[in-house]
Structure formats: structure tokens, C-alpha cells
Length: 172
Image (tube, rainbow, N blue to C red):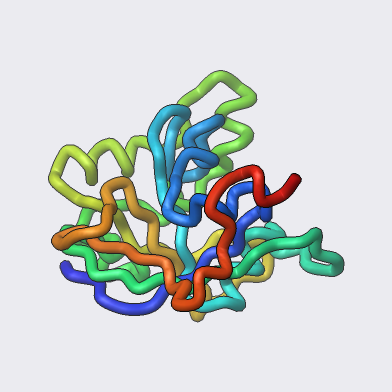
């Protein structure tokens, strides 16, 4: 499917100079990417972006930079409902797996298997429910493995006045 819309991401200020990078996720891997696979994790609302960055424990937040993105991407697999997951032969339990526990135990998380299959079938990303603590059905994310500045996988950060830093030196 084609996803065209706005998305959000809360960045650690140290990474805000490169808001289209998935390098941070690639360092150690996350729920939907293994180490070395750059992945852009976006939320479909700013509320969800903060829920994700705080893991749902937002009693106090360390500083973050909230960015808005314009997204126009083809080849997105929508897994937000049980019907859509069934249509794509994806189990909710695989998406919601305890990925960190699997890594500690030396096993590959089930969610990575879903990603491998979707990528092999040509998906550039997927729409999924949020698995952050306290997430509701309204909390949804867009996970991208292929994106760039041009169609068919176009993602641009909204920064009309150039407020985002241009390099890491902006913080020294």
C-alpha cells in the first residue's frame, strides 16, 4: 500500500542534526531491526512519539527534539489490525514479542523474522500498533527500512526555517 501523510519522531538532541538517519537504531538493533539495519522509526501522532521515546513511562522526560515528517512511501505493509495481520500471515505475538529478552537469551526476536519476510517480499516498511507501555489503539507507528528524498519512498523532515543543527558541532 501507499502511505502518504504526516509522521513524528522525538530525537535525542545528539542525533537531531541528522533527522532522517536510521543509524542510531542500527547500532544495537531494536524491535524491528537487527544490528546494522538502518531503520527509521516514526509515529503517526506526536503523543505516540513521546510515548515511544519514554517507553510509556513519561513521568519525567529528558530533553528531546520533536520533528514532523512528510511521508509518501509505496510498498508499506499495514499490520495495524488483526484482519490486516491475518491477511499478511503475521501473528500479533511475533510483533509484540519480548525482543530484548530474546536478545539477552541469545535468540533472534520473532519480530525480526517478520521483518525479514516482509523485506524479502519487497516491503519498504510497515504500519504497526505501538507496543510502548500504556499504548492504546490510537498509538500507531510507521517503521521504514527503505526511504530517501525521492519517490517512491520519500520522507522529508519539516524544517522550513532551518532550525535543526547541521552537524554534531552544533552541540559544542
